[in-house]
Length: 154
Image (cartoon, rainbow, N blue to C red; front, side, top):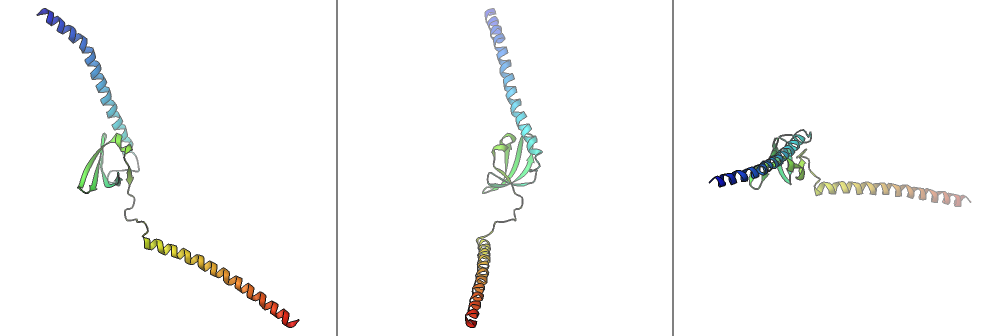
């Protein structure tokens, strides 16, 4: 029995440093992930472009920034499933397509508005050309009148 106790102590004394090393490595990786998330969270929190309550497009879906935490940020998303909360680790925010909605009432021109603007440009160009042609015609007419006068008196 003493042999088993001694063998157990020997095995324990051999494994104990390795277990301590594994625990240390695990703690280091956990701390690295925590520190990365924490720093990304601070960076995102202090970014003046984004604040809690802002309306954004998150990967093409309309969303609201609900909470910017130290490790993760919560987005309220409007989608086909209704209003859901999406939890995103702060170190992943840089990989997402995140766009801020500045003025949702601002719209692009409709086809009708584009057509009116193009027609106005065409009308202006034609008016300019017509006026230029009119002046040239007047110059030509005035030149002929002078020639006719010169021929009649000569």
